[in-house]
Amino acid sequence: MSLLEEHPFVGNHCESTTLVNLLRQRDIDLSESFVFGLAGGLSFIYWRTKQMPTPFVGGRIKPDTLSENLADALNMRLSVHETSSARRAREHLLAELDSGNVVGLKLDRYLLDYSTDDFRFAAHYVACVGHEDDRFALVETRPLGLKWASGESLAAARDPRGPMSSRNRAFTLEPLKGGLPDLAEAARKGIRASAQNILNPPISNFGFKGMHKVADLMPQWLDDLESPGTGLSEISTIMEDAGTGGGLFRMMWAEFLAETAGLTGVGEFQEISDAYRGVSKKWTDVAGLVREAGATSSRECLHSASAMVHEAAEEERHLMQRLLELTD
Image (cartoon, one colour):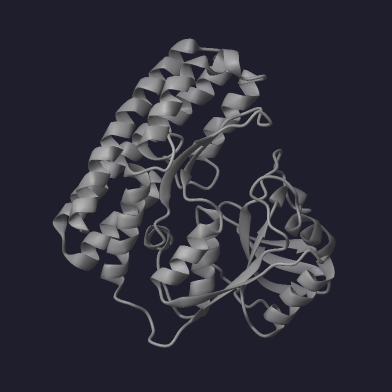
């Protein structure tokens, strides 16, 4: 069959890139940053269990929630299909593709035959835009773009085990009666949701409290991690390079706020967007210091990173409070 999308959108973050492609098939053309913001995508999480050799430092809401929130924000139906059967999963995917639907898939890219990843991550997303014989066309983020995977490797990747995994999760988006809501109002709701996540975290590992917590723990990482060189490199990559758009998703958030300023005519959204670009740069610098600490065993780098994260936490708390007031 021919590709449903010969020139698909290729973005920064896997789930938002997938959603942009699903929306474009429905003739809804929104930027990736705006999609991320509408879904209230910005957050902060620090997580570590005894089974985790390396802590996880993330900057977005939990997997799958971005898709669910976006459907709510745009008055669309999110149709989700999950099954423990590889056969049923394949049959469902083929039926959707042959009906002309682009399909979002959740998987572990490590298991795909084109992957060069050296780590497992079961909450990666791609848009499937076609198939030919036993190969499937998948839309990845930059720099990969459109890739083809064998049916065998796709089946394995769609049914991984471990944290954040799902059983062959596939999803589509379709408009509901009434059409799209007012985008300016929808943007305000997305801003408010993220502000609440940052300002009122349920536990101290999340939001601005989680930022302060990770800042307190950073100076101990050289002694605390089993393999500091590898572990610190991995933390840095997840913060900066693993689909965050730079600065732990803060640059995407800044771009969303700038678009919201244009939609609403509220200049203060632009001012906060500019401030968030500065916060994004700070998180980028933190990731660089963490990487350098791993490469050189520098405690000074971790102390500098810690101080910078404490500063970023207070800046974000202040900026999110302003955003909460603007959207009240």
